[in-house]
Length: 358
Image (cartoon, rainbow, N blue to C red; front, top):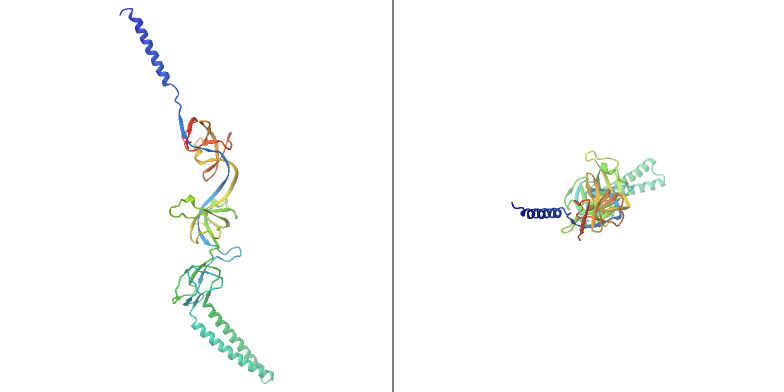
């Protein structure tokens, strides 16, 4: 090779090395990432802890010196149903006659007893006249008096039996069901109808024994009604109530405790309806809270991503009570009003550039 060619080869190699160095430097330039996220605020809120349960609406049982709010109207004696003075859905007052059994046999006994009383009264009246003139022995006088008393007792018994055939409402309420028709034979103590006071309903809840430890009389209960066609479950109104009874014993078969909660009259809930309920067992006021989706929990702990300008930085927090879509948090350097990442919080680097989307 000619000596004049060496300078050209050397310059060509130098240019090649410079090009390679430039490309390597370009490859090593840091790539800036930008993550699209949604944000929320750290707020102060009143949070609640609940015991959740399902239950059935029932008439209030006899308690606190008050009678039960429902009754099965039974026949005190066997007979034929001759008249019905009520119908299903009718509201009746206490003491209103609802049914009457066939009274023909009872009427005959009353009439016979009335004749016996009339005879005994006349007989005793004659004995009184004779006694006034001392023309009768004391024995005959006493026998006539005893005969009158016995006749009056027989009449009272016959009238009582006659009155038992007229079956009256033991409480004011609504006739929920009628189980017999006129002309049918009714057996002793067979239920003719169901009577319910719709203004006195409560909810019977079965609470697991471990959760029942937190329950106290007077605690607030919120009931959720069943959904209707085309409606969202979360759009249904909550009905308020109070814990009014906590059973002192545990059901060994289900390991649950019977709890009764009051239900406001006019709530629109029917007897026999199933409802979901939540009992407020704890209230925490003025606590820092964030949206549930902003808390990222891992084995190493929980974090939230604080937003500063166009960057998000993860910080460690201690999560607390959860109430709906809010979670109580505690930690260093967090204050009310700070912005946190909500949607997109999972998978964020420890510190990254973000773009907030609406």
